[in-house]
Length: 392
Image (cartoon, rainbow, N blue to C red; front, top):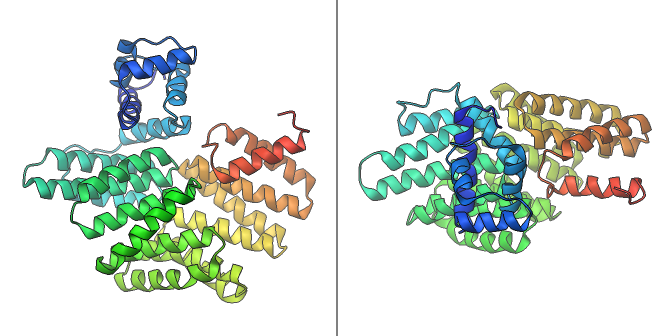
């Protein structure tokens, strides 16, 4: 990062600063944490790094991330987002235009650029005039989209920070409160924090009756996912059906496609294979026609898992290859890891030693660039240790 663009340095420094302040740490606190790790960095140097006025050697940034419990991948995503944002003219755009731009970019799976647009919308809402309550609602909605982008980029701690600030700003807006609570549920189960997920799930159920259809559909989909991930497929089914019906009524094709894919896999796991596979294909086709790259990628991974479960290993490999190609094009490193993980598992089930070894090499390289707490990452790392006789 020493020769990086000044805008990238500022973005990385701001991300480090926001994480530090979210943890309630002062500059001196962080300097002491770094010193305890054997890294001598003065308070003034940290300040210059956070403001983008000083070069940012990778070793120092990595040490700061470790001291803040922030995955280095989050900084990589921030740098990439800032680099891409240089190609997007965010100056002069109003709040509504920035929100629309972020939604368009997010629908195409371009989350780094969408994140820049939503953060700019938040700043615009902060600077614009008008009643304080109206500004807070606009900031809350921008922060919800920021949290969703960070969630999809698997920067969970930062997503929680944004969702928490949105919840504090939401006030008496039942819809925004429900969306913020639903994001906490989603991030909770992605982090395997079951206590937090259950706590917010109960809160979401209390807020559901008074919410508008869009917020209710989102919360129902998240609650259904909670049961789906816990293998409680029968409990998830009616919630998925309600969410799909609401999204269909709202004409929200992107959200409908994603819920259809997960609901279809849920049906497949319940034993209704024909209907489940048809629903996954329907969601995939809807995503392909709408050019919703993120949902198309997700659908291909699900189809790969279904083909592998049916013993159709060549078909599974083909689906995972297509998913990896989209993830590579969008530079979504976590999704690329998941596509190769599915390919690795399919090769193991098929007894294809050559393909398994190739997938293992790719996954080992990718493992250094992703959040190690990703469940699939932990499983792969554990398997790698066993395969090497506990030498790694």
